[in-house]
Image 1 (tube, rainbow, N blue to C red):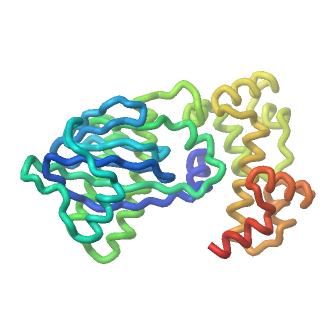
Image 2 (tube, rainbow, N blue to C red):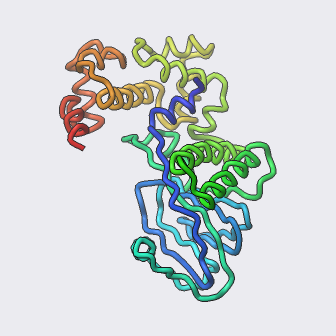
Image 3 (spheres, rainbow, N blue to C red):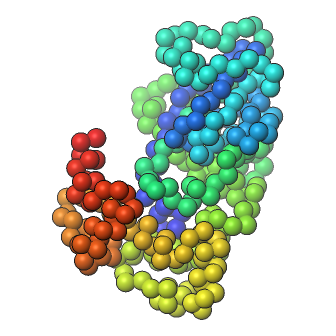
Amino acid sequence: MDALSTVLEATRLRSVVYSKFPLAAPWGLDIVKDENSQFWRLVSGNCTIGSPDGSIIELAEGDLVFVPHGSAHWIADKSTSLRMPSPEFVKARRAGVNVFNGGGDVTTLIAGHFEFDYQPPHPFLKDLPPIIHIRQYVTENQLLLKQVTQLMLEELNNEKPGSSVMLKNLSEIMFINIIRAYLEQAAPGSGFLSALSDPRISKALKLMQDSPQNDWTLESLASEIGMSRSVFFNRFKKLVHETPLSYLTNWRIRQAQKLLTTNNSNISEIAASVGYQSESAFNRIFKSKTGLTPAVYRRSKIVE
């Protein structure tokens, strides 16, 4: 499995598609900060988005905007339109109230969000920019994104048995295509996504992610990928924004979190499976990263 696929599995990506909804101008929403990543796809009409950095994005039909960190932003038919706080809009929709029915031009959007069960956040997520704008579909990955969103639209227009599962799976496919399209458009020079494009650093990531139980050292990793110790260390840190052994430790703890909530093995067995032969050392490092001992962490997730 490639390094990004392993990360996405570890983050336990989940998605929610709200619905397709028409909005008659004038309309506007102030989106409050949220722990999830939102997406908006303009199906038809006019749409303007106020980016978290203060810039304004004019969307064309078929464009998609992704807000990876759940930052506060706004969306409207035009920048001068009055805007309603998003919690009020959600409350009105649930009550069956059609808020934006002013009789102007109608805009149709597909919206939703992505959830990541991953603390602390993986460098992959932290390195994404505040907002990603995927423009008109031209490249192969963007065309795939168009096909996926078209299938979502068909499911929303014609609810059939299993539609909710279809929408969930399609939106998760859409997320991967958003990342692929972003890489084509932006070609980031540093960060985790750029590390995936570096054959040797990507290989090192894969080695650590596939075999966290191995007794990896800086020297053994550098040897495996055919780099000197110092060149590997500097290159990895520049791209991933943390040292190789720091990344390894964080990956081991994240894998342990997953196993503690999905596996009935005892704590010493889980510790060994992620590279710690000493249960006491594992307990100490786990608590330093999560604030809880493994046993308390497991019990807290069972209660949830």
